[in-house]
Image (cartoon, rainbow, N blue to C red; front, side, top):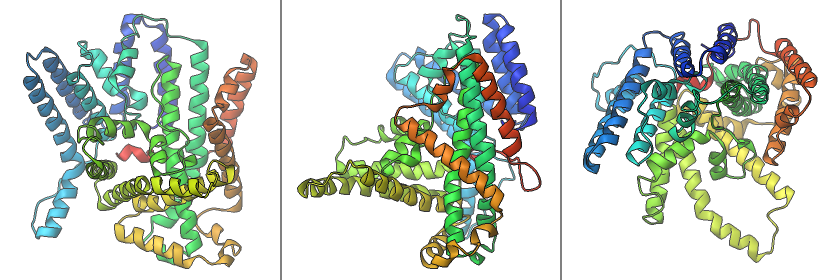
Length: 489
């Protein structure tokens, strides 16, 4: 079930209406039923995989909690991780590895004709993170219904954020103890959801029309350097608006029910470097890899060389997590190389600027760093979006060798599936989103300004926002109301 579908607009009001009227002790069970139904709307059979992950990690958590030795707990933890990653491997990576083996070794390993379960990487990582936390001494959840809801909570089930037990599970444990209806939370949740719909329907889906024209064709070579560059920038904006838009809807939906889930984005395109970017982009995944992969590998405790190797391993795995294809691996590796390179040169660069007494905190310098980082990230996104590494390299080459000054003025921008009216709407939306992000980075929440107004102002604002979404949201022949981009991961 998609957040931007009619079925969800029917499902969600019914869900929260019942949620607020059922007895407190029934809230967990109602949300669990709603979450399972939400997932089954996509593919009823694959809910069995979700249930299997829940059962495996729940039992593992209980066994680790009851284990009489650290060694026994470690064995249970290992088996749990193997089983969960085994399921993930079969459904997401088996064909990738079989194709690779067949190509390298000229073998004939058969492919599996199976559909990738939506959100499997997200709920698998969340469940495994819980088991590792229990092994490290966190509280074990003994109520299987509450634990099942922790893994399957529908707002963040299929595209995150990847929650931790000490946050979401603790809030679930309070569902039967508190009066969760709160007018302020309800209103804040609605505003947050509307901003998510704005990012998805007015920006991501509008950007997708041009992006698909540039990238989803075997004739990409027919586009000039300027058009390819615009397509790359548009994809950079599209994936942000699509994924962050989903996150805002998820956070808002949970907030309406009085449940706080973690943020996943913090103005990533205003970052001043690759490390800063990953501290702001998909933060729940970044911290997951930090806590459950980077630190266990040794982090920075075993010398600089080992630290840099660990960073590269994390980014390689991150690339593979995003997709079972070599261009995703290349995307992750390139980020890792730049991340290591940035750390290697940061010290000498700082000493150089200190020696010449240059002020690196000025607006001009920060703007330059933000611009250069956005360009760098956008170039790397080409490897993410392209079908192959070769295609990505060719597109990058064409951008740097094929841009001509007159292409900015010869109407090339109107030949990638967009018209002037659509572009005008898009540019206004980009400007609005940029202002919101700048204010957010400065600690001024635009949505927070709306929260503080009187109720009549709030209702009028919500009404106008819905009208604008209906009028300017992307519909019609060019519109494909398909899944959010990160559903495939």
